[in-house]
Image: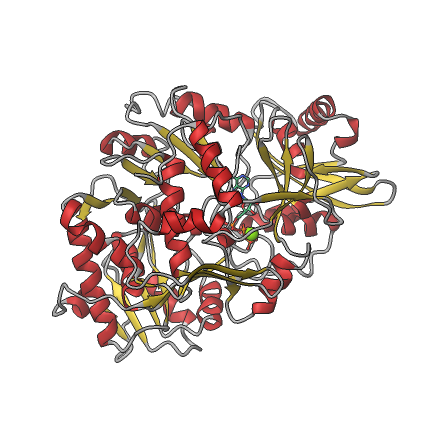
Length: 630
Ligand code: ATP
Ligand code: MG
């Protein structure tokens, strides 16, 4: 394959080409896809409105680039391997041919319910193959999907349903979570009390009791029963909306990030194949949920566009025990494994005994995504899971970027713990100071921007284009602002420092919360920590640290003092936390990110306006933190 990077010099060469001749570069990559009509122009753009169009006037259907493209060559190869939550239940495998038929049947069912091109469809489903079928069926007929993580509350779901004016919801009766059954359909019913949704299709998963509303609610197996397994794909424009995805909400009201068809298709396949160095026949597993951008780009679209075998896991890492991930790796001989630092740290806390006895020798590549991976977790992952043999790809990207932006190419780019390393071809990074001046050269630190469009970038925020402009394109003129701080070291390698609103200014010294957290985490008794700034009379801002600790054989006082000493030793006395609160847990979004704005409110003692907390994994934790406040 000509799009494949095989060597470091090959990467440097491709990068150079993509930066000097971006249009020629992307036209060459896009040429390997199937277009009903080729584009007239590769790129039209300005970052002021913003208005970005890739492969202008190209006509295609993304699912033809999965099915029509592969059916006659690798139609019998597994497309999706599914592992259920309960290890005693049989898994399922769908070949490309079988997946195609399921997608067509369901696409026809959607059509017979009056759903078509341009309609919005919410998918609120557990991690079963039908979730992917639902997404692809929408794409087949030109409907716009918006997947909402099936653990969100009815309020969070209702907000999203109403924001995108969904015509239909695809859901399930229930969902297995560890040993529990969650009543998914009941949550949907509550969310739909005041909405214009006309159709609800319910996939039967747990067989629990549900109420079905006459004329609105239908069983999945009933609606597909008499449908044909062929469905001609709708012709879409490159810039037609493919999906809306609401971001996890760690920084405020969820935004409906809009991705379009052509550019997203080209970029997700290209980045998937290169970053993970996927080879034909490999078994690839990404542990994310499809309700998250990682699930969209690197469980469903990227792998399937590449003809890969993608594993989907319904359950959680600790059920029935903390060895589950490794049992699955052994069972299916997984070659590429992609997960989040939060999962790595959680499993790290169980020790290495739970890994012993599993054969992890099939693994070739390990991936990390979602937040900065601290050095300790990086080394643990590398040593105990990768057995010092597998390169780690620390992939930095965002819902808004659609695909991986900064990452090693597995086995090709030399890695450094906690560094996302170098940008992928086509990604023109730029570090700016707070005034927007570009910081050139190496050994610099500032705000991460992107100065040239890439194919899978956000086009708008649904229903509110101005919000897109204000959030991403107004802070620094002519640039996309990521909201993240970054350091480029003496080798030109990038290290993401976390969000810039997470920077604390103590007596004029700016430091990233991640830096202080890393120092705190060096203490052997610390499991996880989160640091925020709060108003301080003398220093401007003080440092408030929330720390989860293993308290065996320790008192709170001596631990707090030891942690302060630790930070003082590693960063300097200036970074010594003013307040340390030992907490039982941290407020996290469903995708595992700490909601720092809540911790900031607690630290500032402004408890009356906590903002949107509907996407929190465990709202109880907030109450406990407030009670134990320093
Ligand atoms: P919201 O935008 O609603 O606050 P979110 O930013 O948490 O939600 P995502 O788009 O999933 O939702 O997350 C992107 C952010 O995650 C990045 O901006 C960055 O802060 C962080 N991130 C992702 N991957 C990495 C990584 N490999 N290293 C460091 N940070 C990462
Ligand atoms: Mg974000």
